Image (tube, rainbow, N blue to C red):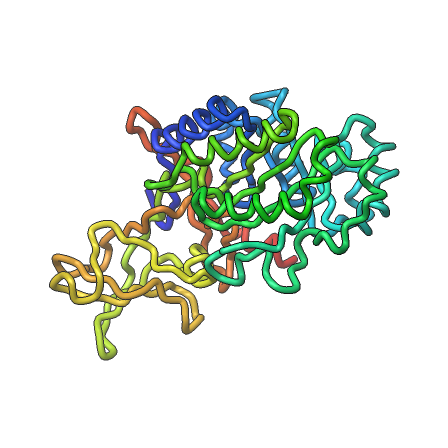
Length: 377
């Protein structure tokens, strides 16, 4: 198939889902898919067999969840949160959501009557800020100084408790269960007194459950202890990255090779447009068969095919020289990649494909000029 292309491996996805199902069975928690991290809806028939629904960050994600996830599982839940809802969206969001999560008391007071009038059965939650996080970088720290995400205990309005069904917090980013334990202590200290009369608490995302070495049994213990403390209250987790972790790759082609102090290879993909988190985090994506600079015989700087000077994947070494036309595979590029990618410079969006469990490669979607043009009209 032509490159660039994201390839999701169905067998690896199901392996992650089975592990998440184990957590649900052993802990009693409900796990829902965070669409901001993994939204490949061609996989939803499989995902919906294991997870209880989706969490959306606004109207369009909520629509995707209702239209594409719930058609396979009519009992699936749609939870919708936004830092701020808009007047023109709120009624449709209320109509298609089972839970709505407000970011501030102001937003809750402003929209509560309209939401309940539109959907009397919807459950109401408020996102709170436990003011503790060990997120690795500030850009991904939802509880950092002056955070816009969630309500601190100082700004919590107890008059809203009679309208609340639940509370949400999100404080983690690619972290283990010990980080959750610390956050829970802070949450319990600040908001525990409000939990006894609620239906549920949402522990948010950032739980790196499917990463090798994650302490799954500790996570299960933490959930069970919290449920026991608060009258068997329902617990939700909403991972995105943990669903899409190490289930696929981005494949690209070498277009040109030249020297400028070192060997440089230009690929038909882009860190800026197709792997944005490698620059935002930042982190160095693993390349299949490659090593650190100088580790193997031939070292190249891999660069993207845009005019951005910093569109560079990094320096990698290979056992043999790269040649024009060679394929280069960037590992683990299914989560937080194509949901964030762009057509910057008019570069073609990578196609989407699934490698089925029987080994067959199925092209799901190929993008073209119209996908670029339609955004600019």
